[in-house]
Image 1 (cartoon, rainbow, N blue to C red):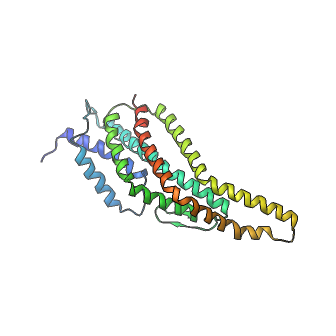
Image 2 (image 1 turned 90 degrees about the vertical axis):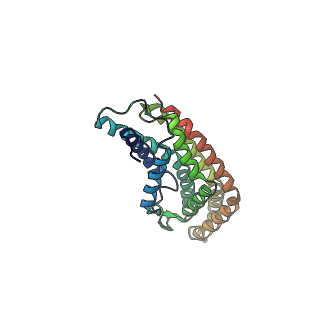
Amino acid sequence: MILTYTQLSVFFLIFARFSGLMLLAPFFNMKGLFSLAKVSLVFWVSVLIMFVVPLPQSLPSSIYIYFFALLIELVIGLIIGFTANLIMLAIEFAGAIMDTQAGLSSASVLDPTSGKNAALLELLMKYLSIMIFVIINGHHMVLSAVFESFSVIPLGQPVDFSAGSQYLFTLGTSLFLIGLKLAAPIILVIFIVDFSFGILNKVAEQVNVFQLGFQVKPTVAVIIFLGISPNFGNVLIGIIETIMDYLVNLLGFFVS
């Protein structure tokens, strides 16, 4: 089959949007995934949907305008991937707060999926969230969101990033608060433990409260974490489903 100039132009525009998604979207952005496999996935998905997405009314008249259109498609994909990845950022933020409160922030290990150091509870919550994300087909939801984005923002259509940026900022703030709520049980319990140690230090000054805290707080934090773990899955599923609903609404704000 011989592809026409129009089909090739449309293919590379689609390829650019999916490439932006792969750079930031959860699960797809893990360094443990083989890069060639991700490129192959983007290529074949672009080929499959090339014949079903709405075609642009007119193609760029010059190579410079076409490269600018490719850049816009890449940015749209990055926005979709970043918005979906806000889920994982909120989870990692909650885990980092838990580790800090429990005194586990110094016990960091290398996270092979990101190449960065992460503390124990943060890493555990991240892996749990990725596992649940895959189990409920969150990666399929992200790909579906990109496919739907071609109906909301057709290829080559002008994009207004200002209104969408405000909506994205509001969404990020909401997920920041969700991270605080997830860490709230451990924050509250560790506060009570610290308050109790303060009273103990006044009553029995010979007790080494500082050393005792290193032994008690991590144990208490792990017990509380195990206590809230059964509900963690349901909370995360609700967050993922909500963020996927917001994705299409977010893209609507970018239409000029």
